[in-house]
Length: 228
Length: 293
Image 1 (cartoon, rainbow over the protein chains, first blue to last red):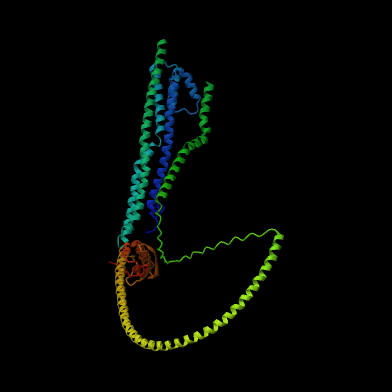
Image 2 (image 1 turned 90 degrees about the vertical axis):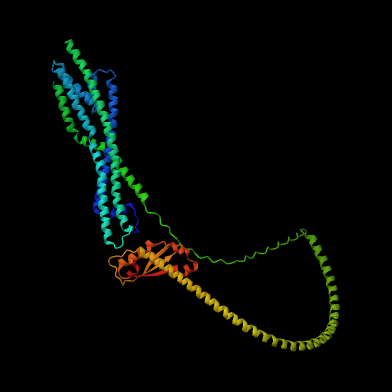
């Protein structure tokens, strides 16, 4: 019992179940941090993209020209993708010679809705993983702790005189599992809440943009049909 | 129409062509997050390891006994400065003149001296004769006085010897008495020390017994002797197995118990003499039946 109570000795003396739990938790922590960073970068990019595209869109540029420019760009995402799909559907229906203005509007709106749900999918991938890590890793750590303490007390049964020194290392190593579990869970929960709120805000602004764009198209269709 | 179809086909082909590129792009997209997360975890582990490293052990060296003695410092005598030698004359001619004059002067002085010596010798012979006579008379007188004194001394000496003997006897008796009482005091002191040592040995034994865990292999007639080295402040300097019981687990449990029981602050109360005599190094004999309380 005089051996050093370093973290290594705690880990290496633990039973294999506890070690397994700790490994799982460390793995979960590492992957959740990968997700956190990756999501963070992606969401921030999406926000910046959205702002810059909105500037471009409302700058009074001709929409057909904007559409052509965007098609040449390598990887349209976010609002660009919504605009492209809506405008494409609109121009296709128009070129087919559909007379019914409502049908044209409906088609382009549907296309935009599809694009929005694609974007939502993109933004929300991995967020459930963070939620899972956040909610389960404390329990997993607790499980490791319970198993470790059970082992410690079983060891105590073999000793005639029960001293604190004969249980303390076992309990310490068991508690380490809970500590790792909490360490994994806290950032995951925080990140999940933050990112889901941001994604919701982004999707709401996508929706409003789609509505605004639809109203522009609506104006176009009806002015044409009236002139025709 | 055709051109648009071509474009479409190209668009369809593009992802196919770019598939490995796409894969690498995804990997590139995740490369930074993976790096960040692994670095973060490594940092946390390093910080924990640094914080959790066991406390540094304080090594207590046994106090060294210092013997003080008075040292006389003899101050070195200051040597008188050598006198400044008179400067020599520098002119050669003057020197030869001086030499001649000196020679003349010396001759004259020698003659005067010889004359004086003769006179002194004569006077001395006369004095010696007178002195011899005087000494003879004196010697006779002294001889008489000495004889008288001798007789007196003898008598006095006898008296003194008697007195001395009496005193000696008395003193011897007193000394004997003092020695006996000192011995008695020493023995008493020793006994007191011994009882004190016994008491504290018991205390230590109890402290060790409290910390002892009985290994399953311990049997009642096993005997382990361990030697402890202690500091006057009760710290355990070393513990060593002198004779083992043959059962390694039991020996280890005893040493473990000693280590756990240390330090023994009770030893601070002991007098230094008692500590040095009994507790500086102490052997403990442990039997399992003694350790159980």
